[in-house]
Image (cartoon, rainbow, N blue to C red):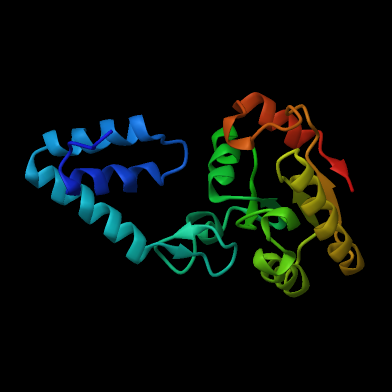
Length: 200
């Protein structure tokens, strides 16, 4: 069946469909919504995309996303720098921060070890984590990867690298459903998992 939409609209729809969780129908709705927006709002939207892509980068310390040399958590002198919570993505930091209970710092791996997806340890931010532990006064590393096969494998791999460095390595208590995602956990469940973490 022939597509009767203007080519730029088709291209815009295809670009929206590349976003996670957006199918072709949702992408088409978004594309049509953009066409109904004021030109000034479209310019602002496009500029926000470009500006975020150009100015946001990895924190020099924890690999979180920031527009400054250090992210707000690493800049905060009131945080306990002796405890590092290792997470898969920057979104997971937001989940922990919503609990209001965790006062340590973070380290973002930007993925999980998954040989089937061609993601190997060197593809993750593991070296910078080891450097932080070796160079700082770190006493505990909390492995807060998701309770999936890849999450468990990544936690176990990093744990083996950290143990010779003399730090305590713990794993979140799950509380959290196996196979679940941290970003969707409620604050109480996440806090309890953090509070009842296990030594690895």
